[in-house]
Image: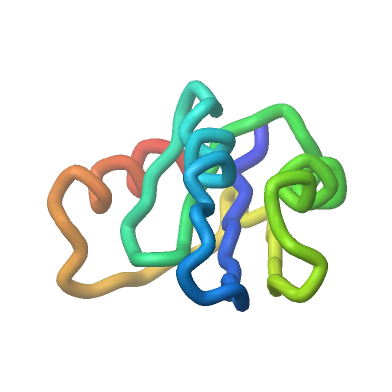
Length: 90
């Protein structure tokens, strides 16, 4: 399993991006520690994850997906549940 970091800039003001958020929540294990920053546990590669997520975004939206499995990580002032998720899933 991989842990993918997903971050985006949504460029269409006022657009309903609920389908995007529902898609990201559809992964069995996910964490959303910041506003447009998700961590997803999946068997997908970063490229395949990107391709799946792009289906729910506009052409002018920006997206980055990085495989962070097993990488050194540090953070500050995250909710305890998010901190625990990161500790247990990277």
